[in-house]
Length: 156
Image (tube, rainbow, N blue to C red; front, side):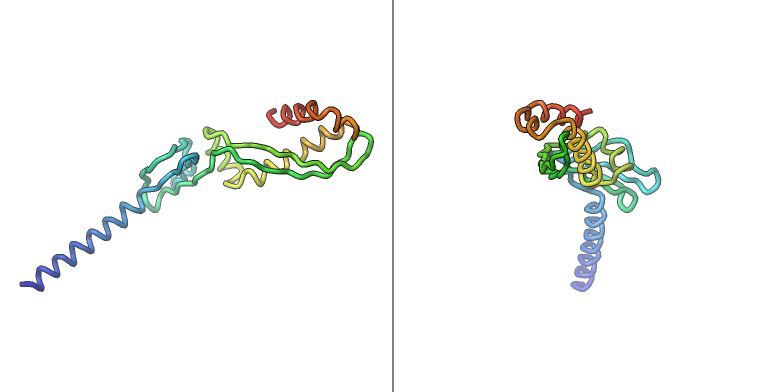
């Protein structure tokens, strides 16, 4: 009699563990300041962006790709030449964040480390092109103009 009770408790425990494992693999969390894009094995990257919280997915078919959408600071050091051919050692400090609605397109074209691939090359080229329009002395005396020009070109 006691053996049957323990056997049924064991079967119930095993069934509960399997059900808990399936439910656990069907849930994922998106932390504050983050967004997720769902990759489906059959349909590819879905166009919807998932916000913060706990969400369901189809286990083993869908996978969440989590992006950090908080503002981040990045320093870009550049050695370039000025208009009067002086070597300029300049560092650009940029505060950036991805546009959440564009995350599916960012993931399909650039992958998750978009800031390393695109941001560094774009900021370096823009900084070099803006600095090339000024003399070394003008870079010091007209800092606000240089800063505004770099900012406008980056936004564009």
